[in-house]
Length: 276
Image (cartoon, rainbow, N blue to C red; front, top):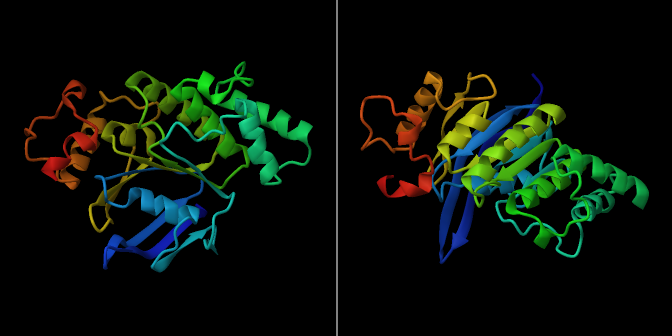
């Protein structure tokens, strides 16, 4: 398969309070076009920093990032990012105008009428037909994230970077958006890198799951996910991957030897970080 992303020997350090803090160390990663990759690890392991290096918001201290063979030196519309916060939209623009703005400012379209037409197509893609004229304060958290995803996809990026995009949402909305995102990914074929703290979410979403170690962030393992979509947490393979991730991330001290039922899982890593 053709590579969408290549990361080689990437190390990223920051000068903090008189010392060099290494956030990422010796990251090597290859991602094929059209893959859906989830990235999981404890807070402070450099997941967001890795996305920012891919996006071009941060420059690696050593090593490099390439998108389809071209080295990343700055931000570009071939890599679009969706963040966790629900305040990503311009509050003075409607949902449709938020998406149309991205099309116009990136010269993806020429002309107001065409940008609004295409924006409407992407609003429909994320299931918000009928809400084009709503402002951010009139939308729920899940709706806001749908608009943010529509805006990011509207410029037809090669890679969609998602930094815990559903982390601030309730469980019901999160599950609905997980299903929505999987459907959008299958329709568009975009390459997705998705950061999460939630182990169940990492397994449900990712065809490959990257587990990272804390400070400095390193890749512990890349796990292939063979479970067919749509994925069920009751699958024996699901439980196997779930336990593998817990052991990789050091969250195994209180686990019994018997497989855990889905109702027994405490998937968010933030609840068990004291063990790490």
